[in-house]
Amino acid sequence: MNLKDAIEGKEYTIRQIDTDDEELNAFLFSLGCYSGEMITVVRRMKGGCIVAIKDARYNIDNQLAEAIIV
Image (cartoon, rainbow, N blue to C red; front, side, top):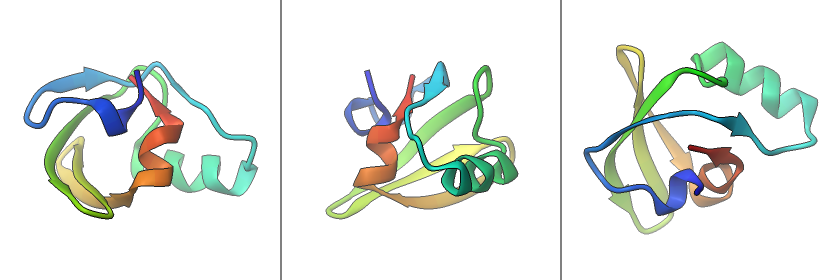
């Protein structure tokens, strides 16, 4: 399942990042978003969601949420 379908408030382990864009992969890695890392959907919004990775929160859009497989 991808992050867009994840339940709000539940902690998940990232299985993979499903994108062919190396720049996007590098950006997500710099945020701490990579395989094996824990991620939580804090809040869902119309255009995306707020996620918690490590001790930080980020606002990601739905397209990016679909690329993160948990």
